Length: 98
Image 1 (cartoon, helix red, strand yellow):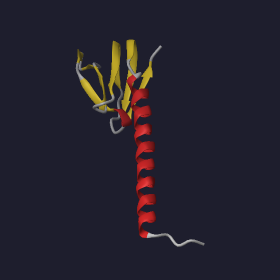
Image 2 (cartoon, one colour):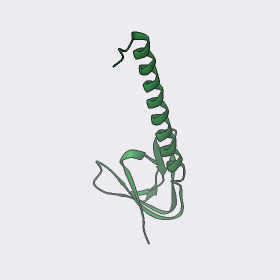
Image 3 (cartoon, one colour):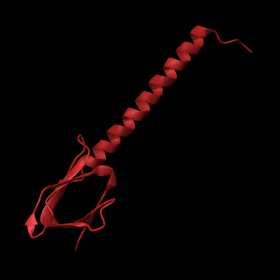
């Protein structure tokens, strides 16, 4: 069996690091591409945010994703008025009401 030289080990380490970077950045691009399609138009939605017990009710509106900033934007009715709410993509679930 051949002995690995320090330069060979360094080259292998750099190669592995580059491969991992490419794989991870590719996953992030796919994830962001999927989230760009998360704009729901013209409907009624219940928006559940982890840590908040009651869902937000969006009536006759839309829920828009902003993947580059990491959140959804929507206007639920709160205390009888439509108000702007932003919630993180990772902890938000949107359910269309029929």
